[in-house]
Image 1 (tube, rainbow, N blue to C red):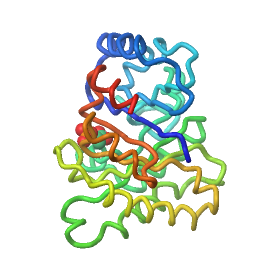
Image 2: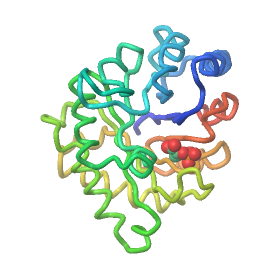
Image 3: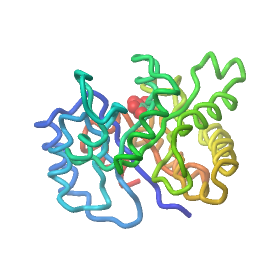
Image 4: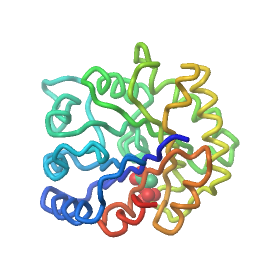
Length: 249
Ligand code: PEP
């Protein structure tokens, strides 16, 4: 059995001061654990506060929510993978549904970001998932396979790359609607099988997380499903005490 990955996506919450307070409160109670990995996807400006609070701890990782694919240059407002790493990130989210649907990010742009992260030595967690319209039209499987294939299309030698997948149905993000463990597992099985087709048995080691209105009440039930390797949590991860409960699930 793989160790669970519990990932917090703070979205645009917890600036540097709040991030330090969160980390101090969380780490005061969350003792070092080797049976799970915790990731805190913080806003880029809060990375030094998160990484600084962690010191050398390797069971909790600082992550960034987004990167740009170029290394440097005239891209006002953007953060490169190398810069995020320098600020303390070990991993980046790519293709979160808010990036895709609020900012219009495409599969091709996700592919560039995954490739840039890999080149800079940053792990990536590629987010994929369908809208309610796509679900009702029976397009979920075809869509997640496409998002997966196209998202990693620019990576050479994917088999040796550090990455994970987050299945996040768009209709479940921030809505209070959660996919049932059974529904999520069915799509995780499709994703795993596509990964096997792409990288053989190495696919068995790639964590596939579920995200979408996870909270301290439903986390344990979702994690019990054998196909769900971890959880990506938005709203319920912003507050340290709620996150502590989920991280200890
Ligand atoms: C997310 O931001 O990835 C997410 C799943 O949000 P929420 O938990 O609030 O639905």
